[in-house]
Image 1 (tube, one colour):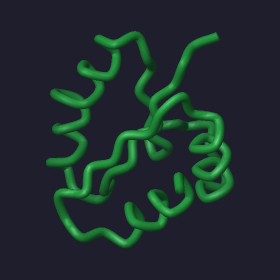
Image 2 (cartoon, rainbow, N blue to C red):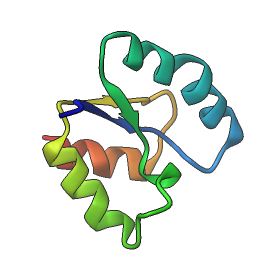
Image 3 (tube, helix red, strand yellow):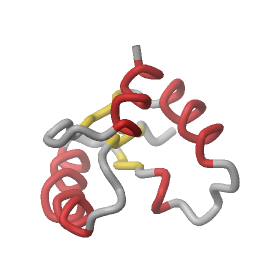
Image 4 (cartoon, rainbow, N blue to C red):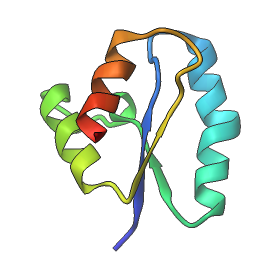
Length: 80
């Protein structure tokens, strides 16, 4: 079974996708985990259900809190 790191970050800005691709994903994979971002999963039909399920089943969650983003705060609340 592949252990997953659920990545929580703003998704509406291209700079965050670049940060994910260039920094977060390679670092996560270096420690033997697969990086997962719900917005990049084409199989997701109802994002909120997938977010909650994936967070609960993830080995670990990683959150980018570099800006004030309500979606990030909500997902962190689910983690808690």
